[in-house]
Image (cartoon, rainbow, N blue to C red; front, side):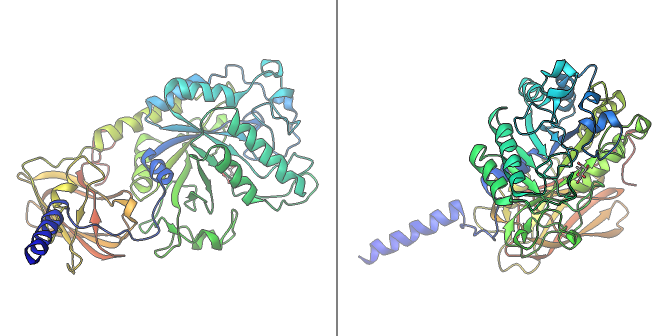
Length: 477
Ligand code: FUL
C-alpha cells in the first residue's frame, strides 16, 4: 500500500517536472474570437460614400442621390492594394451619418438605387465583398447608427430600421469579421435624437455572424482607443468596465486607457486616417501621411496593445489615389525591413527565475503559445539579453500570452552600450504586444525588469529590433 502511494507521488512529480505547473489565468481573459481578432493586427477602413462627391466630412441627409456617381469604381483595386500593403481586411462605410446607403436596402429610400451609378443597379458592398474574397482578405461593415436622413430617426421604429439593415448586411454578403458602430449621435431630420437599442443591435450580429467582433466606444468585443490621431498609451489595458459607459459617452477620456481591474476583456482599436480627413478631398492630395509617420503610428498602436485600423479615403473616381497607395506600400516595406528579430541563436538570454515547463528559451521560439513563467516567489523577475557581438538596436518587442489575462503593470529596461554606459527606459503595460523604442545605440546587454504585475509574470515573446526610416536611417535616434 505504502509503496503504491510512493510510486504514485514519484510519478506525479515526474509529470509536473516534464509538463510544468498549470498556470492560472488572471481574469478577465479574451474569448476565442477576440484572440483571433487580435492576431489580425492591421487592416483598413474605406470611407467612401455621398460625402466623397459633396467634398464634406459630414453630410446633412439632404443631398441629391444623383450626386453619387463614381466614374471608374473598382473594388478589386482597393482589395488588391490592401492585400499588397499587408492589410488583413477592409471595413466599408455602408452608411454614414447622412444616411446614404451604398447597397440597395429595402429600409431606406436614400441609396445607390436612386443614383445614376450603374443606372441604380449597383451595390458597392457586394462588389467589395467579392473583391475581398478574390484577394483573400476579410470584410468588415461600418453602419452609422446616426442617420440625418431617415424619417423614422428619433423614434422607436428607427431601431428596427437599423436592425433590419444590419440583417441585410449580415446575411447577404458572406462572412464579416468586424461590425463597427460609430459613437457619433446627433439630431435627425426632425431635430430629434435617437435612443439606441444596443441590446437589439448586438443581438443581430450575435445571431447572424457570431464570429464577428463588434466595435464601439464600449465594445462589446473591442473598443475605441479614445483618439483619432493614431496612438494608444504607455498604459493601455484590455480589461475594461464597459458596463459603466455607452457609445458617445462624453467623458470617454477617463476610460481610454482601459482599467487595470476592469471587469470585461475589451481590447482597443486605433482608428486613424492616412489623410487629415476621413473622406477624400482633392486639396488633401499632398497631405497623405508618409511611410515614416505610418511606421510611428504602427509602433504606437500595434506596439501598445491595440490593433491598427488605417483609413483610406477612396476618391470620386471610386479608386484609391496613387499618393495613398504609394504611402501604404512604403509603410509595408518599412515593416518588412524593421520588424526583424536580431537575436541570433548564439546570443544568450537568461532569466532571474523559472518554473518547470516554462523555460526562458520559450521567449525566443516561434511558437506564440509557449511562454516563460517567472517563479511566483521571484520578487523582481528579469530577462537579460547578452548578444555574442555588439548589435545596433533601437527597440525591444515583448508579448504576454494574453489568453491567460493581461498582467504587467510596469517594467524597466536597462540598456548597456559598447562603452559600458547604462541608460534606463521605462514602460507601463505590455499586453498582446509592446514595442518600446529608444535612441539607437550599439548594445552590449539589455535587462528587462518587471517591476509590477497583476499576478505571475508570463512572457511569450522577446525580440530586439532596429527600426529604420524610409531613408534607411534609424527611425528613433
Ligand atoms: C467618427 C465619425 O464622425 C467620422 O466621420 C468617421 O466616420 C470616424 C471614423 O468616426 O465618429
